[in-house]
Every structure is written in C-alpha cells, then in structure tokens.
Image (cartoon, rainbow, N blue to C red; front, side, top):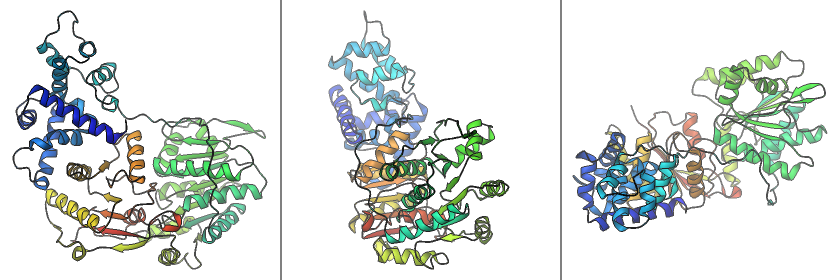
Length: 542
C-alpha cells in the first residue's frame, strides 16, 4: 500500500471507528485538544497549533467541522498519528466492540486474556508507552488495521552496499556545449590543475563532469582510481553516485569500485603498487569527510593521500576548508587535479568572489564562449537552445492581489496559499514551493490537502525513505504541490516542474540560495523538462 492509499485507508478506518462507536467527531476533537482528553502534551500542542494556523484559511471558526476532523488528524499528525493517546483509545475501543481481531489487540496491549474488559482495553491503549519500531507498536498497529508506516520510526535507509544492476537504456550523447566543457576538464586533469566549471542548473553539470573524469582515465590508459567527489548534502551525493553508476555502465570496459562514503558507510583500504589506496571512486559529503579526518580515521587519511582527481560540487560553499585543502595539495610533488562545480559563481560579498577566483588561479570553464566572464550570457544562450526552460517571473499585479509584506505569520501563510492558487489557475500542475519556515511548509501542505489538492511537505526531519517516496511521487505527477523548507535547493531533479514559488524572507533576490531555488524549475525541453516555468518570489522589503 503506497502513501496515497494509506492516507485514504486511514481516514476510512477512523471514520468507521467514530460511526461505529456513535461518537461526535467535533466533540471528540475538542476534548482531545482542549479538554484534557489527550495524554501526550506534544500531540495536543501539535493539533492546537495546526488548527490555529489553518483556522482562517479554512474558515472553520471555533471548531474543526465534522466532515474535516478525520482528514485533519491524518494530515496534520502524519506518522505521529498513533503517538496520540486519544486516537489509540478510539481505535482500540472500536476494535474491541466490533469483535474483529480482539485476540491480537489484547495480546498487543499485554492484557490478561482470561478476563479482559472494555475499560481495561481502553486504559491500556491510552497509557501504553509508544515507542516507534518497538514490538508493542508494531503489534498494536497491526491489530487495529492501520498501515505499518505508523508503527516504524521511519529513519532507515534501504540503499544496499551491493546492488544487482538491471538492464539499462541507451545513454544519450553529450550535446556540443557539454563536449566543450568535457574537453576543458580533461585538459585540466591531464595537467593536474584546478578549474571552476560554471554550468547553470538543468544543463547537465553532473553528467558532463562524470563523463570528463572517465574520459581522462581512458585517454591516460589507467584504471579509474583515486577519485573523490565531494558534495554538500546527501541528495547531491546520491545524484552523483547514480550518475557515475549509469555512465560507467556505458563507458567503462572494466569494473569500477563505487563507494557511498556518507550516512555512516565505510570504505576499505587496499594496497596498490606498494602504497595504500582506496580503489575506484568515492562519493562523500563535505561534512562526512571533515568528520572522518578530524577523528583521524585511517581510511579517510589514505583517501586524501592517494587522491588523483577531486571534484567539489557547489564549490562556492566551504571556502575556508577548500583553501586549507589546496594549500596541502600545493605542497605535494604530484597534486590531484581539482574541478570545482557551481551554477552560481559570484558571491554577494566581493571578497568571497576574489577568494574563490584566487583558489583556482582565476581558471574558469563555461559551456559558451565568453561565459567565463558573463554567466548570464550562458543562461540566455542555453535558453535559446531549449536546454533551459524560459523563465516567466510574476509580480503582484500578475497574481491579482497585494502581498502583506509586514503581515503576521498567518497573513503570510494565507498570501502563500493565494499565490499557489493563482499559479495553478495559470496552468501550473507541478508546483515546487520554498517556504519561509517548517511550520509554514507544513501548513501549506495541510491546507491544500484538506481542500483536495495532492500536496506534501519536506524538511530536514523527514525520514530518508519518506523523502525519497514523496520526491518520486512529485516527479511522476502524483503530487501536484511539493512544499519544503531548506531541503530541495540542491540535488533535486524534477524535470516536469512548471512553477516555483519562493516565500523565503529576503531582500536579496540575487543571493546564491535564491538562484539555486530558481534553478529547480529551469530544466528545458531538450533535457526532458518544460518549455517555460512560472516563478513568484515573495521576499520582504525594508
């Protein structure tokens, strides 16, 4: 059962419980939220806060209307649904009185099977110590007929250390502008130099760089070893890993070790030609690598010592550490070639731009001649080639109402929902939202879902598996609106995105993080994206 069917099944089961027990939904919820009916204070506070945020938008008044109660509970509590003592009590009461699977229920609650009574079942369900992924949580969830996603902690990662590779599709050839970048990267690696590669988001930066690395080793007729790809977050690491895997399958005549060196995974040291080394390609996050080096992990030290090629994605980040690395490389007889990747090379602070240029000896590669000095020209040229989508910026006059720039948190939430509605009225059907806070993102998703629009929310606390499932559903069109806070600015690929709404509070629309958000919607038709993408950037004026 997938997430969409799980939601509908859960709503149906809760409705059946209310109706079967003859309980008024409005009264039950009011007692749970305000009348001391909920034992878990965090859950009570979550329901109250969700009601407060949604109240004006949904025009509910003092109570959540009867027809919205179950959907409100499922949408706003999500995985935490069974952390609610009130809901556990409701479901246990219904299961007991209906006579279905009572044996499983009393076993899950640890009740004496010889003399169970209604009051004892209710109390045991309400007072149980709810620990996700525990045997009692799993057994209780199964006994009341809910999907197992409500029982588990949701933080596991199913990506295996070993994978069986299935048949693959042909890999499209690089386009002329990508081949231009590839040749420049290969030339840099042959000279063990350093260079910044500027390619806009959506132009195949990762694919081009991976192809260049493998082409370098092919031309030197040497095995692919000593390669480190450093990214800033897990999504970027996985994107690089998958790209390496795909390209290796098409381009390499020999097997290559490909390591995931993040999420607590380890790498293995081997001896090559009398020296310790890590075979193959290692993809890692900057945070993971820094941590392993600080802890004096032998494998991490060997990885750095045996490095021949280093790629630093989002190279404009972590400038201090990059400078330390480069000073150490400069002291070697045979330094590695270093490729810095970025879509946003110029910093808000001029001294940062100067530091970045100095670290790479002012050596820059761009896919369009002259683009080294003018990245805007690159974007314009690639848009004309339909590599990038045409950017359509909307202002207040276009969306038909005034934004509350000095309004309250609730005012800004309502403004955001109006913007989303306006974008959808203009035809947007795959809308990516960057919210100003986790709370706003959750409220946007909840309000849309309560109004029948398939929407979901992501933030840094969303489990790995839920995140991957939600992103895949957005990519395939099962989710119309994906709202997030501080999680999808990089390493996110959804070519069908046709509208981007940015509600982040800022006066500086040119800062790199805003440009990265914009880049999520700029995949053009030649790369499987859209002809154009609508953009609304709220910002905040002084």
